[in-house]
Length: 509
Image (cartoon, rainbow, N blue to C red; front, side, top):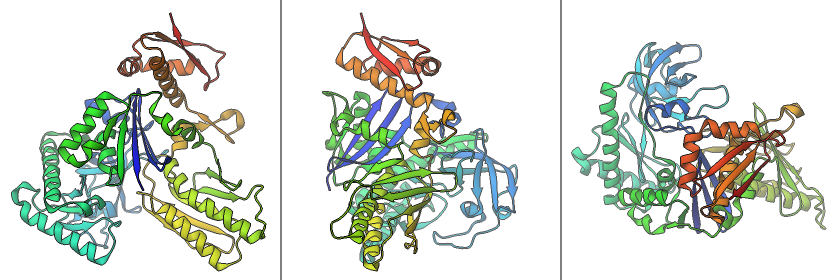
């Protein structure tokens, strides 16, 4: 189906929405306020929305724990990163992508040793980042694997003939690439490579070699802990990972971001440059499909279904529970048909909600009870189809006799609800409220809207003291970001009568 990618490069936050047939299908948020250029990137990334995933770091092994078959590695953050034996096995010189034997952690690393690691999962809660010693650098068509020779394929490439063709093309690419490629390296071919020519693939591998050489050079002169490689910025990463043949256009609402996107396309994916368009209004970019209201609803536990039923999504430390409720809907043909219709709607929506909310770990779905095996099979088929659109690996269990289905989804970052909200102390943790920084970012978006509607006018913001304090703590970044977005004259006023989520933005003079 035709897809559109919307990139809101706002003051303080970059938000990416993938819309299919006018409906939100994927959402990514990355905060930019509080993130300086250069050496301090590693200090803040992984908190308040900044992602560490993909960064390659020269770390130092702090502790080796044989009982856990893992090691803790200092990567320059408050908490050490976690390196499991399976993720460290390449350091024990185990060849091959499909090697199943896992060595002992003591055979891989030693305390005090400097090792090259890559972040594969952001810090979540009280847990540090998850690490792998098998570092990779992703490109548009292939992923470079410096430590492992050979060719592997994305699991999404299906069909025996197609897989054989892709493996042959990868092997030919390595043979023909010669000295321009990384010696002894391997490659994982991505799904985008299925539409590529051998020349396209070879050029992508050469770009990956150019990205890897500086990592080796920095390692020679760096002292652990030190970040040697950062993944692409959010705009470029969006183009690399989300723009496909079926993408009809990429709308970006910032001139500098548009130029950066076009420059990346010229380097890596020239066929996509014509799809990039500058959005200049009227209104805000996400208003095209009423996305702001939908994003706000993503932190609410209740999701309505077309029939009048709903699903409730609630997370705990151990798992996320999804309850399916028929509400007032009743099919005229009986209870089984009522249950089937609501369950099918829920199964179709669950995959989308899990993606948008960034839910990971164990997910337990309590469907309405069904008697007929054929109906159970239909519900599971729809659920599997809904989850198949997810880039993050998932697995589904059969339905139990109690109507429960278990889903596991790889955790790669905090869920959206945790990024945007926190437990409300006044209700003893039974509810949630927006975090201070998420409200501050909403204030900045409202300032942008006001400035666009009244160009040249000074703007006054009245808000709760804690929100104003956050804005003032990041005053230099906030001022520069708002000026870039057309609001150079903004004054913040703290007022005690405003609750955290309450604020007012108005023009002055």
